[in-house]
Amino acid sequence: MSRLAPGRQHDMKMLLERKANTEPYCDEWDSICLKIEDLIEEGKCNVLHSLRGQLLGAARAGDHDAQIKTSHQIDDHIKKHHPERFKRAWNKRVKKG
Image (tube, rainbow, N blue to C red):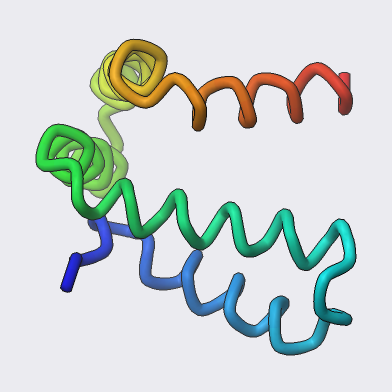
């Protein structure tokens, strides 16, 4: 069983509630399922788990510079080691903006 990365328990709870209130097998339901899978995979990756812990610690301490640095490290790691997840996230950002 995998664990969720630090700070992701609320995200998982929100996604599970949205999934329960959405019609199965529609586009939104599929998107929610992919996000849930991403959170589970994130919990399996020790590097992402560690970086999320650092990000959460920096946020609690109010260290804005450390938050930005750690966020960039997370993006770089996802880009290099989890390319399918990066592509999905990037395509979503491009469609919005």
